[in-house]
Length: 278
Image (cartoon, helix red, strand yellow):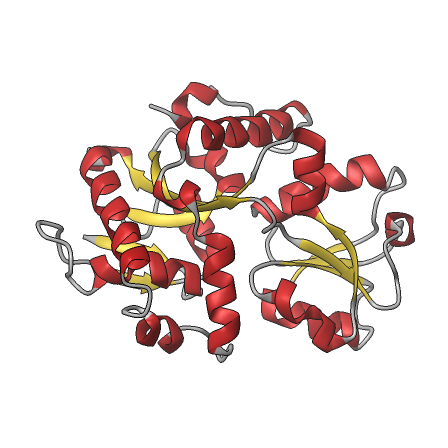
């Protein structure tokens, strides 16, 4: 079976057992490691592997052809994207008319930024530029851009770049809605017709990872893009949680809230929310 997910520690931790054929009865995986911007694009073009990790923000564009697998993704509390600036403090109004770099314009992070900015920056930011996420903090530090939207391990390292946190979009979302924040989703082609077994295999892989937390560390660090083991473990602890094992009613409600609200604001195409569960 062909699958694509990121080389980030949460994904390699989750899929380690399946990738290494430690699950009885699960098919062998052919893995493509790709950042979420690439998998979002592949899904939009109906290309790429049958199973992929994409952004929840990209799901409305592909929901007719791909089904949401209710485990293996990233959704939780205290794990949202950050808006950073240099010497900017925590006043969102300082971003009015400014240039902001984002890692993708089809990401959940960007969708949250748009919802947050509509509420907090009535004048609106200025230019939005898409930039690989690992280049954003250096660009803000060096004054090439005014602010950046960052994800993943950047929440642990942004102070190393002498940057200030303008907003934690996860905190804002939780305060505004009471829901956890949906980030990344596992999807499979509907034509594959394997939602039930895929859910079982991914859940078994998650549970194996939790039961054997050190077993995956060599694999995790092999793909961890030069981050320290301490940062990798913090990344896993933050992004792999009960919603990874089972989306559940709270998880579905969070996704429906995010995508329904974004559709109402005209930020994504409107669609039948029931398709998230079908």
